[in-house]
Length: 375
Image (tube, rainbow, N blue to C red; front, side, top):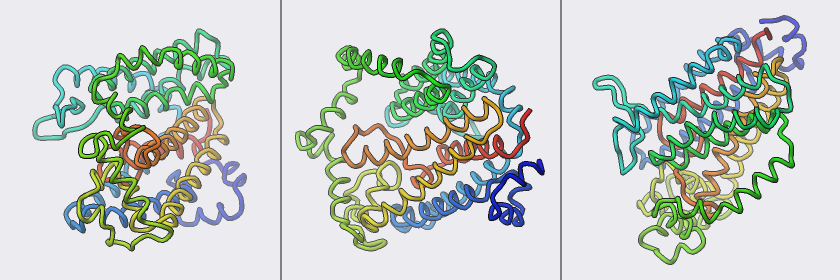
């Protein structure tokens, strides 16, 4: 590691290097914050899965493997990621097309590829990293702020995989991929006038977009405004989650003592709606602690992104952290009844493996961008 880089660090961070994390290109502050969020997530997940040792152990193994992935991703120099970016993107698009052709359908959605005897995986998760990486690669050698032509090309890079993902259908992942790609455009210096114009165009196109939505997607939006119109159907999720959140009060009912989650009133308690378990059992204080950890993690990530020594590194790192913010913001707003239910898990807390691996790989790439010497 560059000695100039080490000397530029604050004194307490140089001392943290004695633990060997710096030699592994791991930022100690970010690493500790990720560990704290992961421990918090496992703590609440044990309650959300009904104290199932099997499910808890499975998630623990996924988390540990994800840390290995993060450390591995941090070892690769950012110039390698930039060279690979277009190939990773093209490979991801090919996999998405393969999903549309021969993907495995689960619960009405065709999102997975199944390699018999080996693995079943969700290619759309790869695009959360591949898309911002490809856009950052495109902008790296071009003058910034970007021209209209360059913005149009970047939007096309984002739109192709996003359209494939939404056709599966997977609205939640599609939104995250769009946010990840457009975050790079934002950090590249997109004019505020263009952003306001885009909002105006989308608002004008809203009636047409409404007609393009599937019936269940329209129902989710209608349920957002009045869940009691279908209390035992589409409105059930929101009504039960808001009941759980409200019943927790300031300090909650106590760990393992939630009624909505433990008695199975709360749907998808261990995945998309796990923040309602936090609110019911640990109360407002418990949710606040988790939000503080998230915000500290984002702040540290943006600090590292700002200190990156290349355009590619700054754009990619900033986009990854902004996407992480969108991740937990959409989940919490969805469960609280502020946004329609779109199926976005709570990062590093919800049960599942693919999203955890993607997030941790992103953190590893961010650390690699900051710790490796610029080219």
